[in-house]
Length: 422
Image (cartoon, rainbow, N blue to C red; front, side):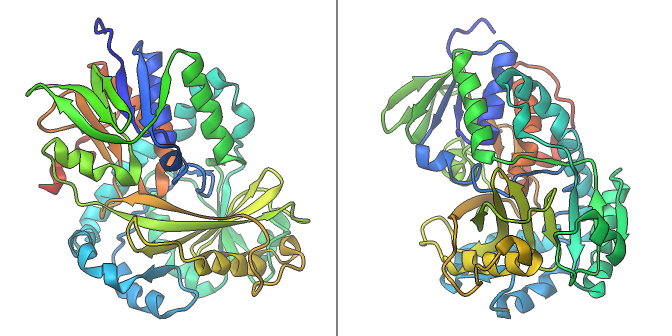
C-alpha cells in the first residue's frame, strides 16, 4: 500500500475493469493496458446474462458422445475447422478427463462459490458508476422444444439444485402465460429467478471504465508485449507504446492471456471458443427476460431497442476469419423462437441487424484461472472465464483485489489455481 507505483491490469474487458475498480476501492492506483480491439472482443458481444446459476461445466458426463452428432448437423451448436484440430488435442484430452462425474461435481461447487455472489459483487460498482439502470433482475428461462430435451437436461438441473439454485418448472400452458412472445412449439421451461441481465453490455463496460478513470485510473490503448521482472517480482509491463512501471500486475487479457502466462514460467492448457451474435433492431414483440433455447444452445436477450441472439461454438483459434453463416444460423433460430419479433425478416436473407464475432477464453474444465503466478508472487491471473465472463467479472475483481492487498479472499481459490495444469 506504500508503493506509489500503480497496479497494472492487462485487459480492459469487464473482468479487467471490475478488477481495476475493486483495486481502487482497496486504495491502489491502477493502469489498464489493452488494445481497443481486444476490449471489444467478448465483453461487448456476450448474451448479457449475469447468471450465478451457471455452474454446469461444458464437459459433462456423456457430452463427448454428443459432439459427432453436433458436428454433422448443418445448424448444430458446434463447428470445428478441421485444420485446427491438431492444436486442440491437448485441450480435448483434458476436456475428456474433466467430464468424470466426481470432477464435474467439484467444478460445479467451485463455480457456484465464484458466481453465486455475482449480482452482490456488482452492486457497489454499479452504485459508484451510476449504472444501476444497466442491470435488471428478472431471472431467465431455459425453454425446451421437446420433452426429450427437457428430460435430458435433468443432470444439469440436479447440479444447480445441489448448489442451492431454486428452479421452477413450467409446463406448456404455464410457459404461454409467463412468456407469451415465445413460440408455441416449446413444450415447457425452467425458470431461475435469482439471475439478472444487462440490456447493453457495451454501455456497462463504458460506464464502469469511465468511473475507473474518474477515480484517477489510466487506460492505455496498447498491446502488452512483456512483463519485466527483477528476478523475484514483476516491476513493469512493456507495451508496443512504451513501458508501464508496476507495483503488481494482473493478467486479465481473456483470449490473449496465454503468452504472458508462459513468460512468467507457468503452463496453461487454454483455447478459445469463437462465439457469434446477431441483433434484430426494434422488434415488435420482445421477451421480458432472457430465454435460452436448451436444444439450440442459444440465448435470446432483450437489449435496449433490440433483441440479441447469442451462442454457437466454433473451434478455429484466434486468426481465422469469421464464418458469418453462424450468425445467419442465429437469426434462423430467433425466427423459430419469436416469430412476432422477427416480423418478416426471413431466415434466408442477410442479417437485418448487427452481426458480431468474438472469443471466449476457455479452459477444458470450465474453471477460470484465478490466483498468483507460481514463480512471481506479485503477478496475478484473472482469465479463462469461458461462457461466464460477464457473470464472474465483479466477483473476480473483488477476489483479485483482496489477493493484491495481501488479504484472504472470500472463496477457496485452489480449484482455480494455475498449478492444475502442471
